[in-house]
Length: 75
Image 1 (tube, rainbow, N blue to C red):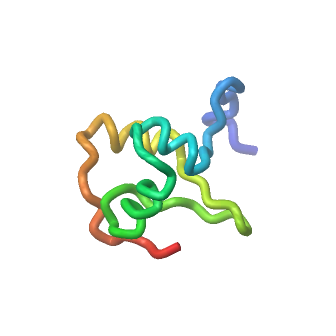
Image 2: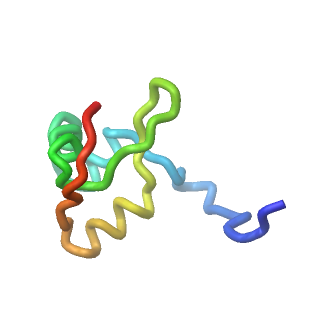
């Protein structure tokens, strides 16, 4: 059984949707998808039909000055 990170805050979900990422960046959801597609931000995770980003990854990306992730991904 995994014990590290066993208790996560219940107020903020670990995985966030495009609307939450857009609010964090002050842009539209479409811009978030464009940035991800162009490889200019961290790639989203795909859970079935859902597209989500790891909150910590986005926060760290913002804290480091939003460097480009040259690999990119297509929706």
